[in-house]
Image 1 (tube, rainbow, N blue to C red):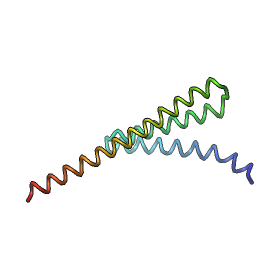
Image 2: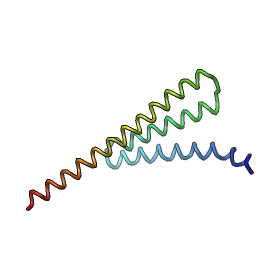
Image 3: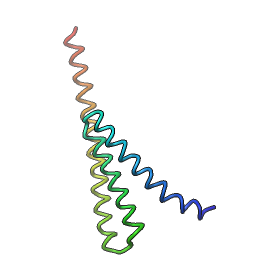
Length: 102
């Protein structure tokens, strides 16, 4: 049972990375907001890292994948921060519109 689990798990991870990448591209296309695009690109990097780790195992590749992970996590961090900023700006704009209406 465990052998089947560890055989299917990498395929599942790769599928999730690919689906999140596709959803990020779709959300960017629909909204023109860069945050979903950045999250999609970060998960595409995770997919590339995953493939590199599965195909080639060396200390050089391991160093590159560590740097790629850092970049991917920084992209996600920036995207979430950007979403929070745009949400707070939108809320503040709505509050100022309701004050102007009164």
